[in-house]
Amino acid sequence: RGLGDVYKRQPVCAAVRVGVDTFRCTAPDVSASVADGLTELFINRLVNSGTFQVFERTQLEKVAKEQRLSLSGLVSEATLAKVGRLSGVEWIITGTLTQYSQQNTGGVVPLSGFGIALGNSVGTAALDVRAIDTTTGAVKYAIRESGKAANNMVGAVIDDSIIGTGDFSGLPAQAALKAVTRVVRELERRIGGVEYHVIKVEPKQVYIDIGTAQGAAKAD
Image (cartoon, rainbow, N blue to C red; front, side, top):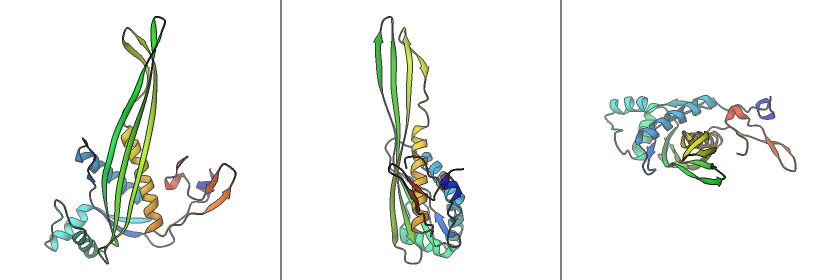
């Protein structure tokens, strides 16, 4: 086991009750279904962190209906806070996917009788999240995180056909996962009462007690 797994940090208080509103999408040429999937991913990460007790939008809508409030369409932060307060949650989390794209670059290096195709693909995702205090209705924290995922391809070009290896699918989703993981870690720190500590410093490395179980990755 790695150092991070040995020194896993547990929440210092009981699970924080949060309500999650469905994420919106302002990224160009991206369907709302991508934001829906990202919301599910975000909820799963929150639950698996062990720090939060999550109330999904369907649960909030049930309370809103009982109080003759509407959560359809664009809903004000004040209304979300009121519904959250009536639902017994401490925080309402809203999010917007602002970037979700993939950029492909590459070309062919000509050789005698054939060529070598070299390519690179980079997926990028950016997520803006707000934490609304249901007691005051104020946005207490605004968090922006992004992620990148890359893949390379090398292949032979014979008669204008590329024969090689490489997978260009799913890179924006992988980037979004990184962004979500970073947002959850920030929420743990800011509203979840979770603390992490530096436990060892070397000339080229710093060790902290967070670990892969909490979503940490090399080069974060």
